[in-house]
Image 1 (cartoon, rainbow over the protein chains, first blue to last red):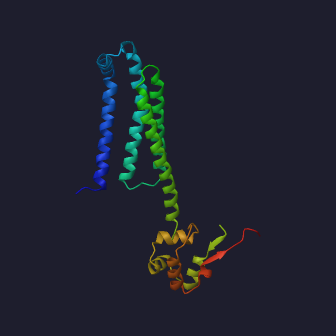
Image 2 (tube, rainbow over the protein chains, first blue to last red; image 1 turned 60 degrees about the vertical axis):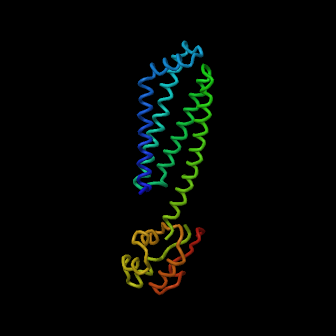
Image 3 (tube, rainbow over the protein chains, first blue to last red; image 1 turned 90 degrees about the horizontal axis):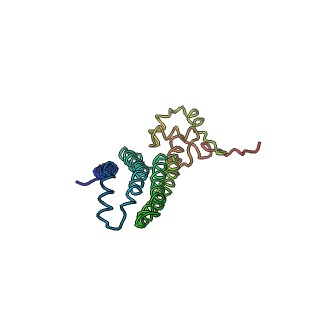
Length: 149
Length: 70
C-alpha cells in the first residue's frame, strides 16, 4: 500500500540518483564535453574548456542544492515539517537555483542555449522561494497554535 | 503581557495539583504548564469552561488585566 513514508523514501532515492548523476557528470566532464562538441558539429571545439568550466563551477550550487534537499527530506521523515530549519533549507535551495541560473547566464557568452537552462533554474528558484514563504508563514501559525491551550 | 493568569493561585485555594487538574479538564500537563507560566497566547472557551467547572470559579478569577501604566 502506497503511503507518505514510501513517498519520502522514493523522493530520497531520486535525490540520491541525481547526486550520483551529478558526480558522474563531473568525473566524466572532459569526455562528455569532447563528445558534445563533436556531436553538435557547431564549431565548438575551441570552446570545450569553457563548457568544462561551466560544469565544474555549476557543480557547487547543484551539489549544495541536492544536499539541502536531502536534509529537508530527512527532517520531513522524522515529522519535523513546519520548523525554522526547513525554511532556512528552502531558502538555501532557492538561492542555489539562482546561483545556477547566474552561472548559466554567464555561460551565454560562449553558448546561447545555456539561456534556456538559466531561465529554467531561475523559475525553479522562484517557485522554491514562494514555497519557502508559505512554509515560513506555516511555521508562525504552528508556533501560535502550539501556545493555544 | 498585561493579561496575568492566576491559575496557580486558584489551584492553591482549591488545594488541587497540576496533574489532577490537567486530568479533570482534559488537557496535557505540558499544556497546563504553558497556561500556568503565562506562555499561552490564547485560551479556548472550552478549556476555560472546564477550568471554571473544575475549580468552581469565574473566568475573572483566572485571568486578570494589569495595566502597564503604574
